[in-house]
Structure formats: C-alpha cells, structure tokens
Figure 1 (cartoon, rainbow, N blue to C red):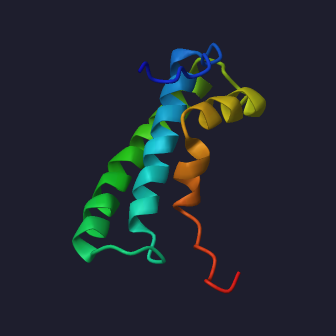
Figure 2 (figure 1 turned 60 degrees about the vertical axis):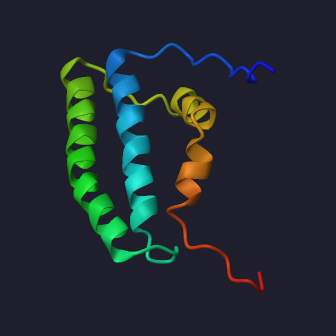
Length: 102
C-alpha cells in the first residue's frame, strides 16, 4: 500500500522555509522539556541543550529574512505550512495537558 500523499507546500522563500523548520525544531525541544509531561531529567537536559542551538538558528533565519527585505511574516501561508508539517501536534506537546477531570 502506498503512503498517503501530503498536500503540496505553498511556495516559500529559502529563508521562510528555514524559519519554519527552525521554529518546529524549537517546538520539539520545548515539548521534550515540558515539566508537565512524563520523562526523565536527562532527556529534558539534552533537549534544553539542543534548544539553545535551535533558538540561535531560528534567530539567524529571521535575521536573514529581515536582511533580504522580507519584512512581513505571511501568517496565513506559514500557518498552512505548519499544519501540513504537523505543527499543531508538535505545538500541543508544549501546552500543559488537561487534567483527567476535564
């Protein structure tokens, strides 16, 4: 059986693509650090160490966009890209999970 196909990504500049990739990597690391989630301290420590470098890459992607004159973040387009790349699930890992009674 063939895997389901994903919708095509909207056209992005290279800097926008790097911005989205770095943003998702930051989300992943923060999700691993989230103290409201099960896990061990070593995993959280490794994620915190990775977060620092991913945050620098995110800053550099945004700086590059700014330097190139890309002064707007096209939220609608980038939100569509984030949905295609599973950003909603990845961002949910950052939130405090609901209590069992919710």
